[in-house]
Image (cartoon, rainbow, N blue to C red; front, side, top):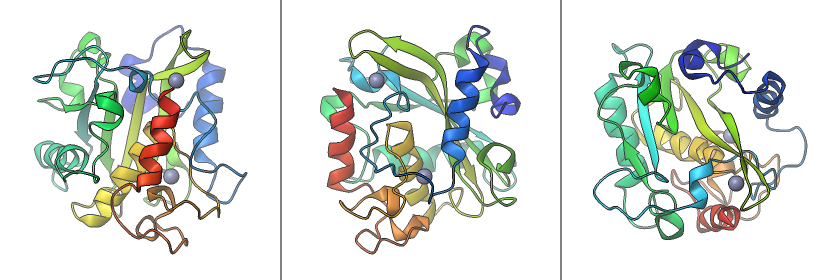
Length: 243
Ligand SMILES: [Zn+2]
Ligand SMILES: [Zn+2]
């Protein structure tokens, strides 16, 4: 099971293991497999709360998206530094360059004040997104040692409003060699992986429309997007998934 190491503390016992296994495996498929364009039609691969908004500008509400940071080598990236960087990337880089606020604040991202494992399981279970910094996630993300970043969705919930399964939790795994860098390359990977959190897929050679999911800065060959932030088409794709 892919998520056993960092997430076992909050793995719900009722989750069918098969669901999780299939879900994780699907996200580990290398970029050239299958034809998944980034307006990802596979609706189970997105967070439940992005369908809904909570009106409370001063803190995380029931339908907001909280994220915590866990560095697995704090001598490389400290939890505070990682949190500041991810928070800045997702919420503070300016209009048109952040996921935060999308869809009339149906995406409303809030950093937790402490690292993930500092919370008791009952509290940790209320945090929708965990961002894990480390040297190597190949046991989860596949590929060569220290190479791939990835996202694993977890804890499915039936959404009767839209007739599909959503995930309550998502785990973002960043490797220090690329997604874990505290520079524009790291920002690009954070935005790319959060694209996965919000339901976008890798492009597998489909270059239109321009997308952070195939930006050259995250290692794809499409020449029509080389920025570290999502494209207007990315924002529209996620809005379309919100229903
Ligand atoms: Zn959904
Ligand atoms: Zn990807």
